[in-house]
Length: 247
Image 1 (cartoon, rainbow, N blue to C red):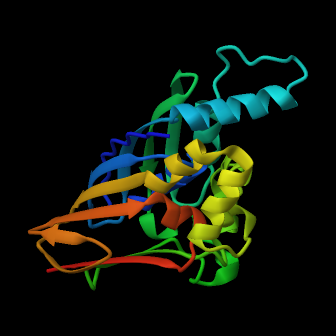
Image 2 (image 1 turned 120 degrees about the vertical axis):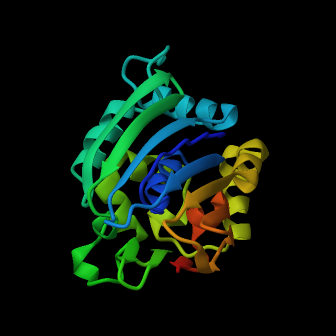
C-alpha cells in the first residue's frame, strides 16, 4: 500500500505516525514536522492503501460479513481510529475521516510526547519515546517484546490489520524478515509480499537548534531525515532505536 503522510508536528515524535502506518500494514509514507521544546506536538496525516493490500482486506472483510459485498464501505475506519487515539496516553486530541474507502486523513495533537503510548507496566522499557529537554535529547524505540501492548493502546483495528498480515509486531511470533515475507507470499501471494518488501517511511524533522548527533538517520543543520523500511517495523527482527541530540 502507498501511504502519504503529511505531518505538522511540534515534536520529532514521528513514530506516532508509525502507529497509523503500522495499522495499515503495507505502505510507504512521508512525514514532515518540527520539534517544540515543551514536548507537545501537532500533526496532520494522509494515508491510502496500496491496491493489492486494499483488495486483500476487502475480500477478507466480505468473507466475514453477513451482508456479503462491502461496496463503498471504508476498509480503514478513520473515525474509529481517531476515537481510539484520542484516549491513548499522551494524546490531547485526534480526529480522522475517510477521504474514500481506502484512504484516511486527520490530525493529532499531542500534549506530551514522552508519555505517548507509554506502557506503565514496563517501567520505561515500554516507552515509545523518551524526550529529555534538559539534555536536548530524544530517543524513539520499538521492541517486539512490548510492541503488541503498545499497538493495543492505539486501536483494536491496528492489531486486527496487522494480525491479518501475520506481522510479528502484532502476533509476537519470532520470525526473520525473510521468513515473514515467505509466509506472506505463501498465504497471500507474491504481489502482496512484494508491496510489503518495498514499502518505506520517510520523515523530515526540524529541531529547535542544530543537531549535534543522530542515530538511525542523517542530519543537516537542525533538520533530521529518516528513511525506514516498513518490513523493519512489521517484523522487528531486532529492536529499532533512533536518537537525536541537538545543541
